[in-house]
Length: 368
Image (cartoon, rainbow, N blue to C red; front, side):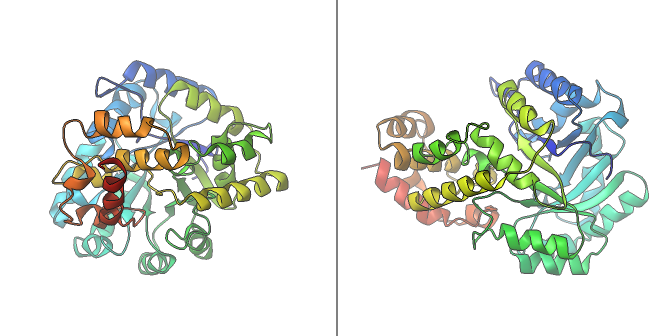
């Protein structure tokens, strides 16, 4: 794992898009700049951008750079297998889609009490370890969304796990639902290096209420995103922090403060804690816009976008989110009131949000 050169990783879940497709010319420029500045870690999964993330990596990264110049992580998601025999063919396809002969890291995706039994029953961990023995995986690990207790169980049952990817940011650090701190402490207890996802909580720590943003702007030390990423990267045992970069401007901002990384100082930590107080007072919906909920929704409700409208309304109290709700996100259907309360969204939500209950509130706000 010593080949991870710097603490910023390129998360390929939110790539630049144009007309519903990955904007490959811009993605190529971003990769060139990223690698040119000495960064080398890229993270994907088959479900990202409906499979486009992996193939864009082949077009823009793996076909253009020598294999030893980058580190690539992919994942096994439970929706792509139903029995052990499905796993190896799917994995081989992932290698083809990404255009590589091996993955540097391969993670069992979004592990938690809900899907871990399926992974065990299908011997997914054992299959991945066989692939590692064959040289097709360099390092085996998990990405994780659940309580510290569940993580402790998994790491006890599978000591072969080499790395754990967790959600970790200053808003979730002491959150009893997400348990970022406790989960991190379990990783430390078992001596597992940590990969950080959602350092800016799906943009929630960038698009903040004015008074929260002002606390950080008054420091005159960088963008709002910079404090979130540096917070996460400053803890012991953090291998790198994933940032889902959607354009060159975001990339340049990240490079500016992560090229020569420095942890937050005491003044900056105090400011971050003040921001947490302000955000908790707003009672915003803590959706990270991962969009896992949208894929299985029978009513095609664009849940993260409706929650974004709700949060914006709470912050600004103006007409703009009403317009986006009615004219953009529900123009073709999929209103909050269309929810049939099947619960599929809640089963897959990494944040464990009461989505059905929240959609009732959204409908009351925007469909009066």
